[in-house]
Image (cartoon, rainbow, N blue to C red; front, side, top):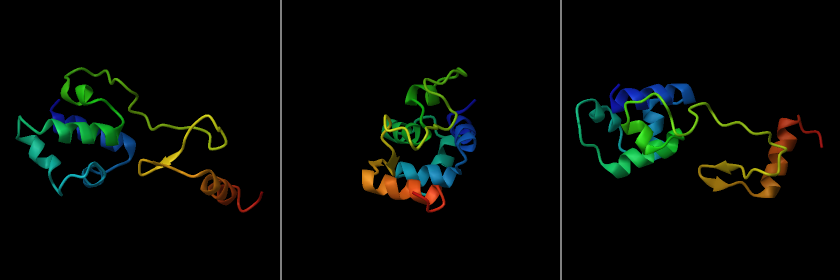
Length: 109
């Protein structure tokens, strides 16, 4: 499996398009498609894509089927205060989390 194919497969399992992965990783449009032919993408680009997909860069570069982290979407209970919820890599403030919880509960306290 090529690097591009691995990225595409994991992105699909995460419910993301290649364009979305590129955007979240801070890469230019259609950059990942160059990985179909290029044998030498920048390490920093690989690390950015790996971070977006929630896997290690070594997993993206390996030919094994064993990810260092799960390729399943991460799930936690929003009421579990042991986890720090983030949005776009930034922690969600506690007062915003309370607002989100109220919305998800249909506006009920």
